[in-house]
Each structure stands twice: as structure tokens, then as C-alpha cells.
Amino acid sequence: MTEEEIMHHAEKLRAAAREMFNMSPDELVEVILIAAELQEDINAEIPF
Image (cartoon, rainbow, N blue to C red; front, side):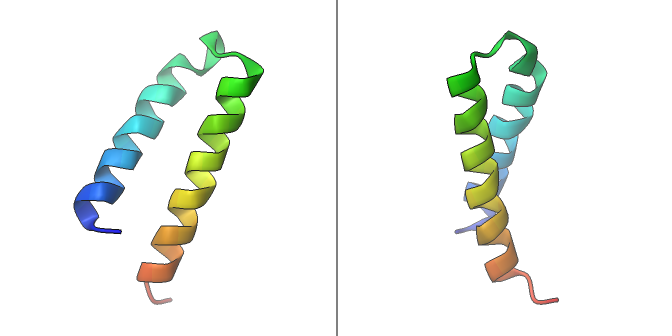
């Protein structure tokens, strides 16, 4: 995943977080799954 793709996903997650109180349970699950996928991608690219 490129830095641009990471930033795009991060912006989507920020927007979702702003609206999370209006989301259905299914929408919240989708956000959590996207966040988990993004975290896996970040972990794979950043050496610790």
C-alpha cells in the first residue's frame, strides 16, 4: 500500500469517526474491518 493509499484510508476513517454516532451496527463493523486492514498494512510496511 502506498503512502497516498494509506492517507486516503486514514481520511475515510476520520470521516467515519465523525459520523459514528449516526451509524448502524453494520456500518460500524465495516469501519472496524477497514481499520484492522489498514493497521495490518501499516504494520507490514513499518519496521519496528
